[in-house]
Amino acid sequence: MALTSTSSADDVAPTLRAARSTPTALWNDSADLDELRQAIAHGAVGATCNPVIALTTLRTHLDVWGPRLHTLAAEHPDASENDLAWLAIEWMSVEAASLLEPVFGERGGRDGRLSVQTDPRLHRSTEALVAQAQRFAALAPNIIVKIPATRAGIEAMRQATYLGISVNATVSFSVAQAVAVAEAVEESLERRDAEGLDTTTMGPVCTIMGGRLDDWLKVAAERDRVLIDPGYYEWAGVATLKKAYHLLRERGLRTRVLSAAFRNHLQWSELLGGDLVISPPFDWQRRINENHLPAEPRIDVPVDPRIVATLRDRSPEFRKAYDEDGMSVDAFAAFGATRRTLRQFLEAGAALDALVRDLLVPEP
Figure: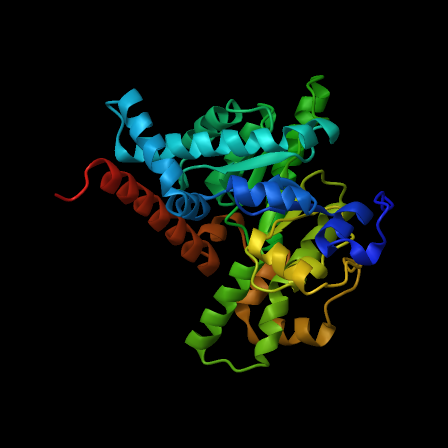
């Protein structure tokens, strides 16, 4: 769509310019209300959350969340520390979702959504993930539920989609995961279509955590004593995101790719122009705007073939992520980036429990 502002293009922040002039949707990688309000002003039409983000938000705003957690504890005297932490996350999510409801209505449910991540401790149980997805989806009309892209999680996304729940695949780093997720979701969307159930207001996405993939490839290279141009690793996640995007589009799958886990600005600038979602932390949005990065469509510009060829030749872990047949569904949970990320999410969950404990049972 064309710019609607009366200001010249040069006066418009790059993130806002991209949001206005391309089909690429900007989401904010945080449910922090202050950040989300500013991100919306910069063009954001959605937001994401996970245990690490929730922990950061609670710690940053203890003046707000300390009293709220005491209130929740009084209202739920039998609740465990973990129960109270998740009640706080739900409260946080509902507040953030309310800021996005106008966009949700304007865009027919495709955007204007707040992602709530399922408890990482449930990652092995399809039944538990579906049950929590149903609880989260009932919190607000514009909730989208994040479920890990493992075998159990993909089956949970298949079932949740059939129930009319919009899903966001997370803990996802590869083309193989994106295809498996999109095919499972599409199967359930087609079932709903065949049964006359609404799919027009659903907005499934599949996250590829490009920066976390880059991180893992660097760790694996250090482990295996592999030396290549270090700048090549900064392109690995971008190349994987571009390939996944084009494959899903070519096959007519309705799940959009989502770029997350920012480590460099290429994970924004190289994906512009695509009908996908880019979800940087708010500080990355500020950096992009402060540096006046060009908001030019580059989704169809391939990554330098020499970079891709070198990565494929020297990094078996990159081949797992980049090749469509690089991993089987059963191998997703064992991928190094998956294990590292799940562990971090589990550790954040334990830290959330400790934060609640220290508030309610402070040391004497």
